[in-house]
Length: 122
Length: 107
Image (cartoon, rainbow over all chains, first blue to last red; front, top):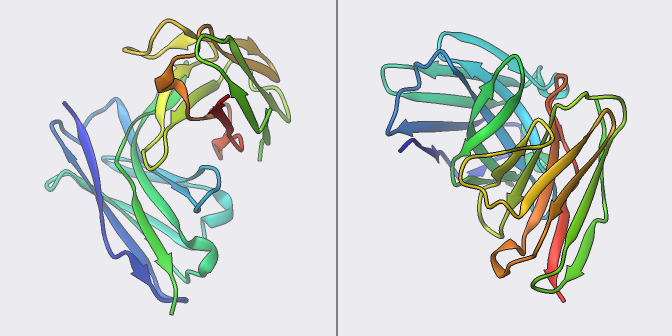
């Protein structure tokens, strides 16, 4: 059964770059059927989609974050990654990776990792 | 961006109650509306997609309806494990956006 697991530092200093990796197990990231996405949730608040990427590349990002976000994928390691630059306290959140099922008829985040809390503080 | 507004923001209900949560989009999203359940400290779980299609493994007491701008999630008979926060999400256009959530609490 497919599982996703986020990993990365739990604390990042302001103005630095937040880096997270999602490892996919129990299945291949190299599926024609899915994108792979990142969603975040500030403490006590709602959900915000950050971006999604296909195993062959072709990332697309939330426009408001586009200037600071880079996503990449490593099929050989069954991993995909998120970099968010120039972070501030407003970027403090639980970061989730998720499988993004994009079809002609629908688009859903149908499997999620457990989440990784990243705090931005000096 | 399409704004998604849920109501109410929270509600109190008893086991066995019928519960209805509403989600309104700032413009038409056809039927590109998903519902998720999130329990404290856990990741969201997909319940319903395309407004009314039940995700595999989700109990039949959950149902969804609506199209255009107005959507509803209904729990026909609330169970103890259903106390959680529920989010709607539109997938009609990028960026995909979520509602602010509806917390269902025990009365």
